Length: 216
Image (cartoon, rainbow, N blue to C red; front, side):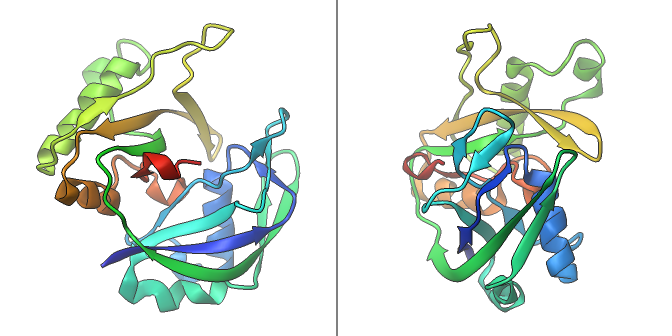
């Protein structure tokens, strides 16, 4: 059974682009987490400060998605101080007492950032686009026998940039992703999609889906 374990966070600010540094910090605290294939990490929600950081709120949580039989391996994170290092400064947060939640079905699921492999023919022609991502995600869903409607917002911001486009940094590399919503899901497909996610870097806050009402 796949579940979410949620730790309350105590601290001030964390990097907005925190996927890589968060997983690195968790792996430092619990070396067993390094290169495991059974863990997905949710992005942490907070209030944007405008300078590349998020201010934690009373609702900010570290949420990990994993098999229920693995819970005992991450429970030791409770009470620990977690260091997040980026190029600018170090952020330190403390993890509170965890709570465990079963996955809930919803006909609409959302992921803040999906990164997915684009075919070499497309990738070498132009930078990955919204349309390329939609096609690649549909293919992944078909491979898993999941039926759903893939939607990526194409609205621009005031500078003309796509609101749904994400740039994440991993080991000095810039990786393009998109925020994605998948609707029209059956109960079975909704749970399956939450269990397996879409695309890579799921330990670094990518490709993890939640019901739209829970999006942070």
